[in-house]
Amino acid sequence: MASYTYPVARPSGALTTEQIHLLLRNPLLIAKRVSTLTDQRFISDFLLSGRYTAEGGGIFYETGEEIFPTDNSQSVAPGGEYPKTVITDGGMASAKTDKRGLETDITDERIKRGAIGAVDRALTKIVNGVIRDVDGIAMSVIASKVTDTFASSAWTSIDNVVKALAAAKAEREDLALGLDLDTIALSGAQWAKVMGLFASAGVLPREDGNPIVSGQFPMNLLGYTWVTSPHIIGSNPLLVDRVQLGGMADEDLGSPDYTRSGDFNVETYSQRNKTDSYTVRARRVVVPVVLESHAGLHITGTTL
Image (cartoon, rainbow, N blue to C red):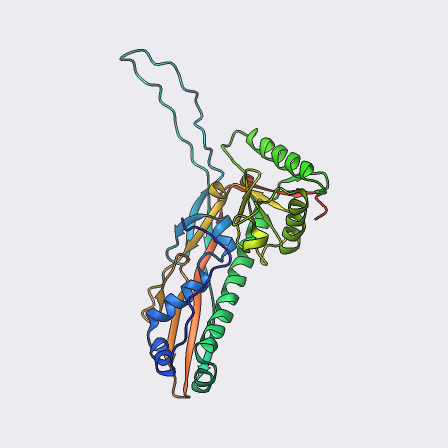
């Protein structure tokens, strides 16, 4: 699994006009430049950490599979036989992949007058569009599948935060499903309020580990992983077990004109046009899959 750090710095440096034209004519170089913009930015891939391969336009998967066997272990005498148990499967479900993409034209005038900055801005905009739409779909799927809630006191003190998270985690562990809810996803406004609470209480790291200073996410604090994204929806913090919640199923269409680079299967396309311009395109063929709906819950009553 990729290591997530937000935001990701991308390569910088002055390129000549000739070098920019060579870059735009090379699909692999475009793909690598786009990968620096997409890597570690999908909140969907962070929360749905499983990686699956879709074939034929979709994926079949099992949901609600029990993590424990139906029988108990038994004492085995020296040389004795071990008891046998039958492993049960979860229910079958299917999901259809969706191709999300954008393209734009970069003219020779923009290249000459704006240099590599004009190219990066164009690539950033189409990449941001793909990330926004894929994340939006994934968060909607999570919201529709994860419907459990936990009532908390208002998060006006660290004590209330710790009590709510510990109680919610313990409640889920009591289901005996082997779940470990250890990641909290917050919207931007919620994140700002929580970080302000932590800062005023003096519980944030003082130097490099302080997200307010470094601007990097996620953050590990109080035994939990805290993450935010502008694409998180809902008015309540989301507490999840990223290992068991689900994953993202990508489909490789085998298109000869597209190049894939990076950890998140974003494909790119670049073509020289007769209109003194290049068409650049980014797409992702993917479907989010929630395998265990009990691997997450919404914490209500925080007043964030």
